[in-house]
Length: 188
Image (tube, rainbow, N blue to C red):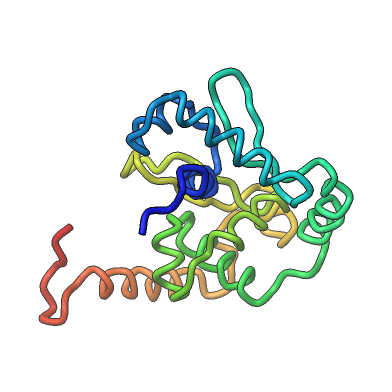
């Protein structure tokens, strides 16, 4: 069963989280620009009175939260910035600190769960920042900020408790994850 074009557009916009051109939508969904415009109109109408809205800027569109949701989202954002860190957030911060930067996939592997939401919350709080990965231009590293070190009362990462030992343990865990069941290196 093929979903209606407006549903497929909604899924693409939700997945990408960024603005996308009408032309790219047409190409991705194998449809004409006119069909895309019609479906965008239907999607925009279906979102009225809901928590999301369709934003348009020139030839680009994206999903965004409805402006009526601003007070609620502001309170939620304040909680994310000022509330206590969860156990999952502390675990994620520890990985980033002891690895001195980690990719999302490394964090996901070590924790065994998707860390996207936690990484976003840590970025919002200014505890980590996302930088281009110098080893792989297709990925990002999450690195500790100076504010995090200052908050922890550290002048350098080596002042973290058991820094050398825990850093070694993380490296061994990652190395183990890069080998197959026979102990051979995994091929990409």
